[in-house]
Length: 482
View 1 (tube, rainbow, N blue to C red):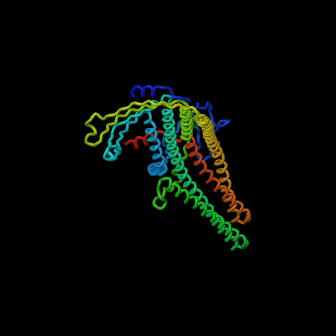
View 2 (view 1 turned 90 degrees about the horizontal axis):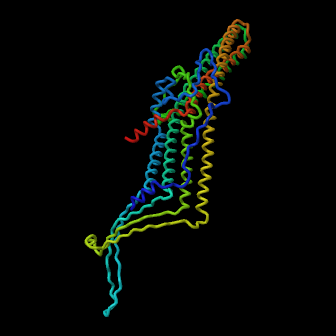
View 3 (view 1 turned 90 degrees about the vertical axis):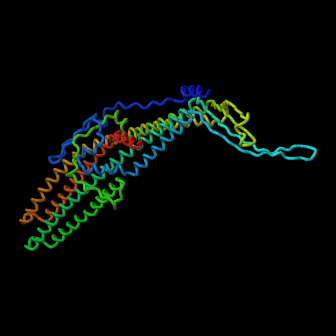
């Protein structure tokens, strides 16, 4: 009987909407006009975009740094964030298993022991008869889920588990992206420290020139003081940049799951971090199937759709079938030896008639929740497209800025060298020397910052493209299964 009803329930209809994933956008690009990456100058490589190409799995390997590969391996293996996300995913998968149990008969065994009294009237008084009653037996119950409420609940829990799966992928993408970014921040800070060191060396050279001119009676002492002031001012640029370096190192240690006291990341440098020259750019139709935040939002939409079915099923009758067998006896020894078995088969039907509008309101609330989640999904997609558009334009502007900074640096350096020679020969004033020095300072620091920003925006684009997390998820799932 139960097997037949179970077969009917598993093939019956399920009320509520059947979820259909949102269609992929038909857009062919992310910006109103195409993005072309210009030359970044003679001494810096030119990047090109590869529309329609997929991001490689370990995209950070395109920076061609063995040290970076090793750091990412350490970070992925030791991240407490990934550990927590893995545990949350395992929890959600167990909740799916628990929800599926509603599709099968529930079997229990019940046992009881009781002592009871009975009053017996007789000519000699009112004696009390005391008896012991023992009972034991199995019971089985089954909800055939005629209208699919349990199946919709399983669908909802499965969607929530998939949501956690994509949250794990997002955590992996965030971790790998942040680790690469902090490595670039280390290299950028070291580049700026080197730039400040060059500026300070020039300040000291200028101070020597002014002191020589003062000794020769060609410069006033105030010029010496001004040169010393410029040197001190530029030396004050070092501590903030060194702090940036410390922050990046500590952040990378934490991302690697290490204490900054116990582990120090490598000293990354732009001489060992190669800028990727060919940048893959997924089409929008592919991006919505690649970015884990979009896929996670889609699963939340799926769960909201299933919740409509759960609420709708509450408006329909529910059927419960149950059967039990009980052995009773006045002693444990005779519990299974006599004809004392009692059996029953019961079918119950419960149909909602009046609940004060509660059930209808719950269904409408589920519909409203779906509408809200659909809007959230659309916002997530738009935000992702906006991030890609921003980083594409950023790479274009980075190349333009780097070319401009490179030209400004070459001009400022040539002007400074010429002004130093002219000042030594008495043909230029100290104010001219100071102005040339300041222009060089601005150009040198500007070039260092522009170079670092180009690396950062390149890494950001890989992250915005979704970072190719699927192969890692497969390996992670295989490791968890062992």
